[in-house]
Amino acid sequence: MAQRIRKAVIPAAGYGTRFLPATKAMPKEMLPIVDKPIIQYVVEEAVASGIEEIIIVTGWHKRSIEDHFDYPFELEKRLRDAGKNEQADEVTRIANLANFVYIRQKGPYGNGTPVLNAKSVIGDEPFAILWGDEFIYSDPPRLRQMMDVWEKTGIPNVSAVRIPEKDLGKYGIADVSDVEPGIFKIKSIVEKPKSGEAPSNLAAHGAWIMPPRLFEILEKTAVGKNNELWLQDAISTLAKEQDVHAVEIKNGKYYDTGNKLEYLKTVVEFGLKHPDLNAEFRAFLKDLQ
Image (cartoon, rainbow, N blue to C red; front, side, top):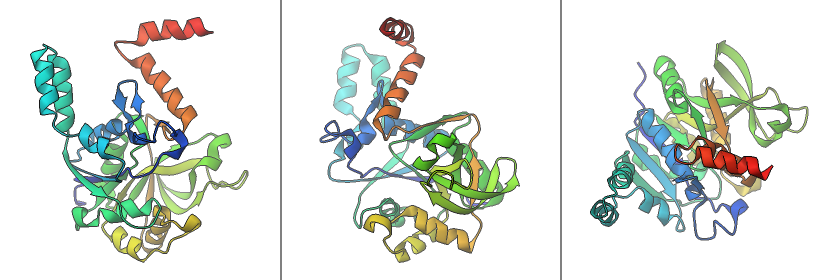
């Protein structure tokens, strides 16, 4: 049986320039989806999947992420003194979700750098990687589905979702061959293919389960496009050494909260699901038409 996945790395050091000026002083990962920041959805997915330790790679401007998952003694006391026990329970629950470790990013630009920065904390274990500014909502959780495949096969894997043809140019699209229903062997990943050049409609991105060997590869990977260290380049090298699978996520919906329009769509959708707001919010939207 494959070694159990206990740790997850969440890169969260980017500047969030697409959301300026909102992200001038607030991390993009802390933008709220109604009343919960984006990164909390990511952490809750990891914890619901069985992850015990969360390594968040941040920058100097991301202190509020650390504060959000900290134990809020003063806030809890104030809430309980005011009789707001439900809110007190919630803020305390957030701090107890997992063991949190924070690392300040060092090295070249690129999404491979924060992963490499986590090497000393991960050690000689397989681990998960999830972005802090996007998530897939699914039942069972996306990462749990990936971990189930890992535990069955011991083969590194990437989450994958079907993308409409008009959006294929926005993502890394996998060239794959069938292994079994819902599981594919990745031959290559074409990053943001031009119209007509996508090898499939399967976007492989958002979450990874990787062996510690990835760190050795990242250390030797040259900076690539835009003079950045790319995680995809390292995974492509790994795929030449051994199989890497794409796991098509069942019952899942991808929320790309890293761009303004999709972020707004996500807020509206979750507002319509919110138990305290849905009826009034739905009526409000109808009145706008």
